[in-house]
Image (cartoon, rainbow, N blue to C red; front, side, top):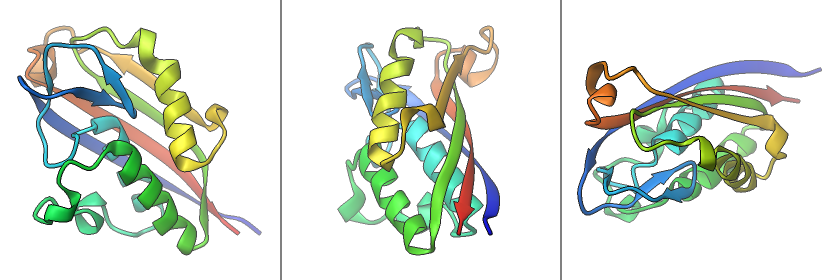
Length: 160
């Protein structure tokens, strides 16, 4: 018998100069990057939070605190791999992931398939279990003004 659980994750980071833009474990060519203690990959962070939430295991702040120097500069890939390990130790596996990146710029459509493949590889799952969408906010709010990028994710986790 399977125990199915759903989790939701959200993350946002400010855009700044002097940083690489990492989204979904992929470096996106752009003049700005996301500011954060880690590589600030909002998509990976939202997915990790959704996974942890579905398993009732808190959030990435609990497992990867930004006050801890050992997590300074870690990649979204590292966070996804470590989160999968945490969830698997409790008997959970990924059913599927659906996510959306909210950014006015840059245009993300050309990178979505590569993100899907990279996230799936990081989690050790098939790419068809990961869906990634991108949208703008029609120049409204902080993302629409180009001040930051946000991501939402939902994840179905299953326990057997």
